[in-house]
Amino acid sequence: MAIGSLTLTALAVTSPLQSSQAQSLTPSTPNHVSAEPVDSQSASLSFTQAWQQLQQVSDKLKADQQQVNRAKAQAEASKSLSYPSLDISGSYTHLEKPIELDLRDLNPIASLDPGALPPAIGNIIGAIPGSLFVTPFTEQDIFRASLQAMWPIYTGGKITAAQGIKAAQVSEQQQQFVLTQRDLFMQLVERYFAVAVTQAALQTQSEFVTSLEEHAEHAKQLELQGQIARVELLNAQVALDDARVKMRHAQRQNEMANIALSRMLQLSSVAPSSQLFMLPNQPSLSQVSSLTQASHPALKLLQAKEQQANQLVDLEKGSYHPTVFLYGNYTLYEDDSLFSKVEPDWLVGVGVKVPLLSRDGHSGKVQAAKSAQLQARHMKAQTQQDLSLLVDQTYRQLLQADEEINALNTTKALAKENLRLRELAFNQGLSTSVERVDAESKLHGVQTQQLAAQYRYIQAYAKLMVLSGQLDEFIARVEYQNQSVKQGTHNASK
Image 1: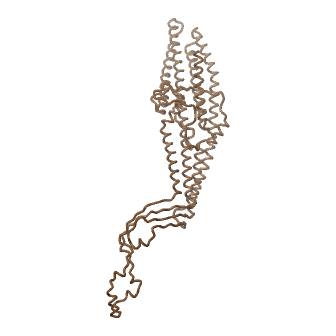
Image 2: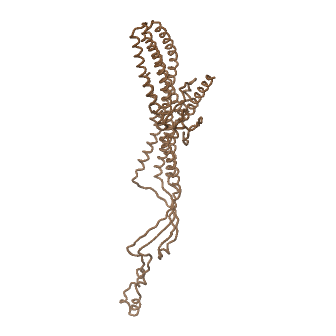
Image 3: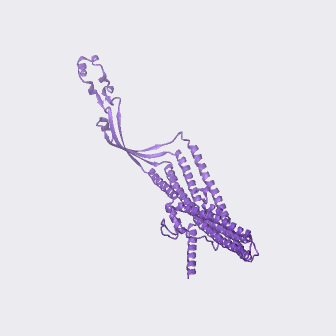
């Protein structure tokens, strides 16, 4: 496999489950081996440090965390729906005319014409001013301030349903956070180990160039001694030039992988220290499947959506029920008038509101809510099938990569032996330079294929751990590999 195709996959930003964007717990960093904070000028960067750094600097993760905080704040705010409301209201009213009571409207005698009465009585009544018969209740301009309270004590379940929807939205956003966290973890695995594999590929290509340089120099000496034809020397030089071009290409691929990882971690430079690794035993497929079906955030997200749909049905059904409420009013200020003296300063009562006919289309809304309920259930069932298929496919990709690596071990041993024999034959003039270069090219190709298979193995293993929520297990494997490498280096130095 060419080095270019080997690293293109590494640089791709993929998600384990893009089509099912969905731990009903507060998002938190997995409990794994602790690491010191990463300095931007750090010489080496373990995978654990890289993961911690990513969680600290990822704007996507921060944005999703704010979504969780927003949902929590809205859920907290919905609790006030059960509380009473208390308001201060003030008003100014200008009347067409003051409210007055004319006693002559109540007593027919007072409205008699004084001229129609006997002179003595008529003179007495006529001498009484008309204003004495008028009693003012209010002024023409009225100022008023009062304290008003209202407390719904029964709403047909609408308040409880609304609060349930907000609580389910918190769970939904928490699961979305976990999904984003897992997606970023998978991207980090791909980019981090892309640096390791491109570095190894560059090292392999560099060794290939060094070997061809020695071969070209040897061929030059043999050509000067007349032991081989000039065409053999030219063939060795052409192979060397081609290998140098490929080495520069491998170097650029490694630089691109480093840049991608650096930008992701928002560091000026990175030097990954964790190496490619293999498991002595493959994980249990049944365990991975059961953990995925039991704890995958996509399923929990859809479960939260189903809960929202259930509460929405209850909310719409509650519109058919009456609303019972307590209310009260306390007058803080009013004009000094007869009406204000008669009117009580406070009042309390119980009210009821019964819906008879409305334009809201409650029946249609109930049916729409039930459809949303069924939609969430079907999406959850489909996601369960998709996850099951994804686990099976990824597990087989893991096995395929493992088998390919083991098979290439035999092929590599054969290629090394073939190169050794071709080298001896060429030195004795029994083999051509083309045959010798072909033998080394085959060995280099096998080494590159094995690196690609190791990278695919880690990708598949990481995806299985992400799907089943075993991020800590993957990190522990990487840390164990790091310790094994350090121990081996220490023993070798003794």
